[in-house]
Image 1 (spheres, rainbow, N blue to C red):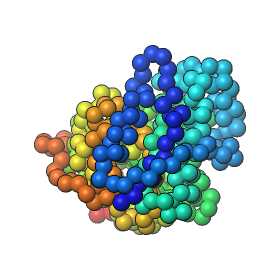
Image 2 (cartoon, rainbow, N blue to C red):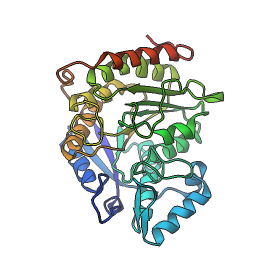
Image 3 (tube, rainbow, N blue to C red):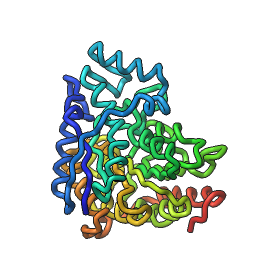
Image 4 (cartoon, rainbow, N blue to C red):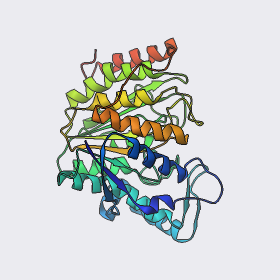
Length: 338
């Protein structure tokens, strides 16, 4: 299977002087995972996002403020999120990586794409940076596609709820957003009864699970909720916000996934959309070995070339299973689940 790796040197230059968990070494680990995966890599340079597209989701005032902040040398955008002079180019090319992938995939360059981007995106709001994110990379790609008449499903398995992505599409019936995340946890949203409203009623799906949840619940969530809902939605394109901070070795979270769980989740999504219409975005993940192994497993899962095996030994607590049952019950008003 050919995988389009969308990257740019500027992504390595988004770095502050003091140590920070969202650091360039993460990208080196992710690239090593791509190289180790049983796929053929085709490389593309991420083009800058058009300002017109950027301003469809982010306010013009915010975009101008970020550009000026970086031009003046940067600093802290909030207690978690930084920018430096080089961050402007990194941010606009991270935001442009998805549209670049769409255009190249439409030309037949590969069967799927993986956007090796920094800074990540799924926490970014219309007018606010947060959670290490400046612009919402996956959301901008969804907007790029939806503006062309495409139906888009976004599956977000980062350990943190993608509050930015949810808020941007909470009333949009052409974009399905599904998040599987630790709860309660940063950034605080992602309650199971947040379903969207107006034309978007039912197109926001949250699967919150407690700390300590293992791959058994994640796999069952795909079987019982994510795949049934996504198939009924019938997307034209699939975007995956692929954070690897749900790995059991990640230092910033408390979910207990292993590499084979990422392979399983990826493999479950095969066939949801035609070849050439899946784009994966690097989001979180802060243990370098876990990133490398999990990126390789993700691509192997999409390629169907991985022994999915069983989850790690042990079982998730009853509270995790109860949460999944409550999600199913609530979604019954919108979708046929289990």
